[in-house]
Length: 420
Image (cartoon, rainbow, N blue to C red; front, side, top):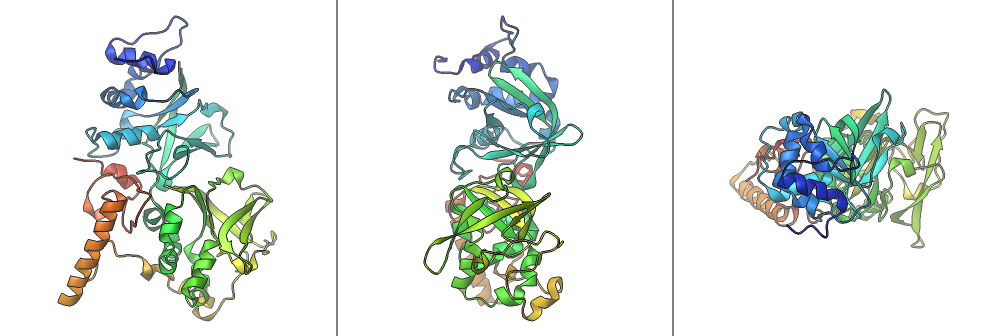
């Protein structure tokens, strides 16, 4: 076996795969020794032995952090299969972080965005490796947050080996999905936002632009303005929504500091790009005058932050009044929207049908069949055979090209990992 091009930190693993694990003369354990010596990591170690190229083909990083799921973590997903090399390789690459990250040193309350080795363009559209969020919480609890809000809790920390550290977790990390299934299935409070993107013809712009930061208003924000926003022309709605996306810059909550300006896709009347301004007062943060209510939702091409109001490109000077618990909308409230949450959530009828689609006549059945076939074809061709929740299909990559109206559903991705 050729090993001359391998990082020295991995040579011990090669030896472990070829024969008994060894301890170096300086008493520093190699990775093979760490994994083989921990009975709670036997499933993970078996995967590494079956697919050694995951480690043998690593570039020469200064160090890596291995997020090793416990045996129970794998048992949580009925039907897990080790036989799909592409699937297993990409999942395990997402469990290897670039650099040596000691979780004991992660400051409490300040999320750390760590780049993984997952770079396959079929799975991610984030430069430098898809991110994993590490949160240190009260009570010496460390949580890894990944796709669609999946949370993995640290069980055993900072196990040193010659090339870095091993962190043992209780649940598999889930590679982030595309924007569409994330908003529709994992965070249903963003359905109105997703429906508005479909209405304005902006889904592909938001879901496929690399390294994006998206400020997504929750359903109640759209309900409050249903009479106003539903009456906008398509181009006007598109301009409003374009004010909610920061292209080419992945900005996690630690970087949303007071006074930060972020350039959006929206333009003013002179054609100049418009900025949003971040304001922080106490523990509250605002985008213009909209409050950040749920930060750091990972998607395949960046990060989404949920906010409590719709941003207005024509009210870019809007600022919060910290003395108020709720900020006023920056659009005129009109018509039925004045009743707030009592009205239907707008734009959700624009969401594509993904299951139990109505068929009323022979003609409509043919039409529905054709539409379903077209969507399926586009999804299969450009979205990697994405299957819906009801299809009982495969764990598939959240492709970053093409339309995916249905698709992966977070934890269900791994639960459906019984692959051919």
